[in-house]
Length: 115
Image (tube, one colour):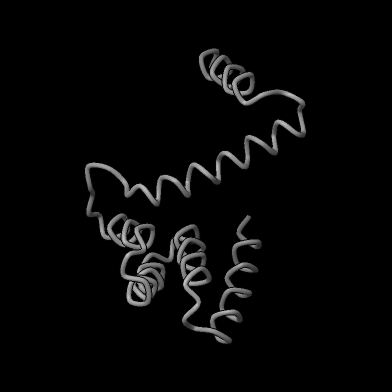
């Protein structure tokens, strides 16, 4: 996994060298840096996102999370994007297994309960 994160970071650096104002690349770069534990750099990437797109709830949430500030709830946009990511994974898992999401969730719940 570490090698893949380094590879992703390298590609994102190249993309940002070509277009330093590309918000999606900056957001993804911040997420990669966060996963690498490079919080100061991640925070800077997210700050650049907010400077370019002041309404970007995901970047604002990540800045707060990195700095230790908490809110009662995560911003709706952040939650929606996170949900969409997991929804895609469930759909993909359903294609691979031939099972519906509710079956997969039930099986996982039973696995966790048995531990």
